[in-house]
Amino acid sequence: MDRFDLINGGNVNGDYLSYSQYYESDIPNYFAYARNFVLADAFFSSLEGPSFPNHLYTVGAQSGRAINNPNTARWGCDAAATSRVQTLEEPGEFGSVYPCFDFDTLADRLEEEGLSWKYYAPGQDKSGYIWSALNAIRHIRLTSLWQEHVVDTTQFVQDASSGNLPAVSWLVVGSGLSEHPPASVCLGENWTVEQLNAVMSGPDWNSTVVFLTWDDFGGFYDHVAPPVVDNFGFGPRVPFLIISPWARRGHITHTTLEFSSVLKFIEERFDLDPLTERDQDANDLIDSFDFDRHPRPPLLLQTRQCAGATADITLDPQFHNGAQ
Image (cartoon, rainbow, N blue to C red; front, side):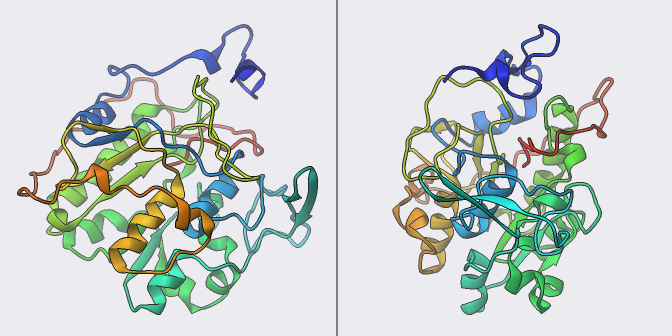
């Protein structure tokens, strides 16, 4: 676990940003959630790579063998015809394919069982559209499922406040608020607080669990080496919070987890078949809950003033990290 200074942006004129950290005074609301709900200290990104393949794991417990970001500005099934993404075929053998796949996702399992779901993500040509993972699933992006179930991120607060959330939701932030280094974590934290306040003040709080995470490690040094589970992962640790009236208060879970663990929890909740060996073998999250007591009240927090913060930054297109 070395050479973090060699990451793009890790060493800027002798300022070793990759060997820095955020303190509680920098992210007080994230600390408040961690102290009141559940923090995982052994949660890893699913794949040793950047945003595109890791977002695919959050819907499908696989990446279609993709290991990198596509080589064009637009990703997924509406990328340019010349777009390609690097794949790992066998150990040491690499290929490239068009970044549009047809593997089963959790959305398909929910659809088959008549369970409601929505994927809240920035719309086409908006900041963060590249992270709309279902755009890379052909049988969703190019069918009516896209129009029926994929909606703009901005609709989440309204649905949460009015009690119109589906059984399962994904919520993807726009890149201007995604906390990509060196962007403002204050702005990103404020966005998170607004989404969670809507859930907590809405009528569905007592039957809700929120899993809050980031798609990869952001370039920051970590001393914990990821376990090797297959040819693709794990990648470095990422933050993970479980926020729910049923979550154990102030609990730190040491269970080894990854994005597929969230899919496994949902599959167990709704009696769905696993998608791949990843979610089948993943540790679940049940040790972080206590269903034998009354649900806890919401924790409504205040957004903060972000001095000198800006939501518009220029990113290296090959290193998209930290997206919620």
